[in-house]
Image 1 (tube, rainbow, N blue to C red):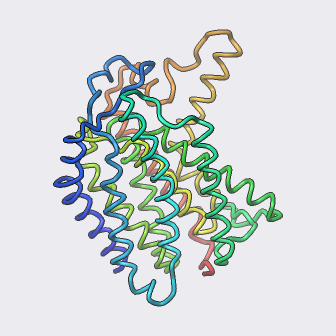
Image 2 (cartoon, rainbow, N blue to C red):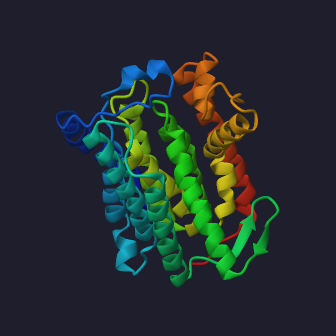
Length: 331
């Protein structure tokens, strides 16, 4: 029931406050998106669309986490709040980046090094807190095989920080079409809701339910043609939320399945750059990341979003069957 309440509250707050207050505010402030000069030429028509719309679902999720999770917090259980605050830190990094872009009226905010250092610091702080709370073990659960790979704490912490930062930036890279990052993350949120329900893990169910509701409401404004973009504010928050959920469940390797679209988008970018350098100017894809390749192949934005979301849903379903025999989690 708490998960349902969290989902409904998040949906309502995101839809109403986001649509009636935040979106008009962004329009009045002329917080328009600057479009990549090296992107598809037809994306130039999107210039000026309000960005930083991630504030809408960040607010909705926050209200839902507090209201639906109040009883758990009264009992001294704060894991769902830790996950939200961790994602919020990444959202704050994205907000500062977006603000710089809007202020300068160009598609450049924080430097890559600045963002990387801030993200690593946030990841390490979160992992240290989760270890202190007894939510982590230095072992990697392998879906389907139902086995664990045991690591030393130093190795685990380095690997975990790499996974978190990689996930956050992969989600950010996926946010390149109207409704794409929003849509492919909805099945991911539903996966964690289902896993929390299966294991009776109430706290994470509350956050996952709030995430699901917030994204569904945001899609009202973010679906093609988008009235608002989530910006780095939203995409970094989403990346932090997905990564934090995986670690809160103590099964980060599940990100290989539930984050398949994020991974493919990132790999396409890596392959494109490597191939370009190795062949002295040739391109493996028509354009990277992957969604732009399909655009140049003639696919509409809507078709790409539908297909990518379907792939995400299929792999999230596989992930559920891959972890359901793990049993109950401690904590």
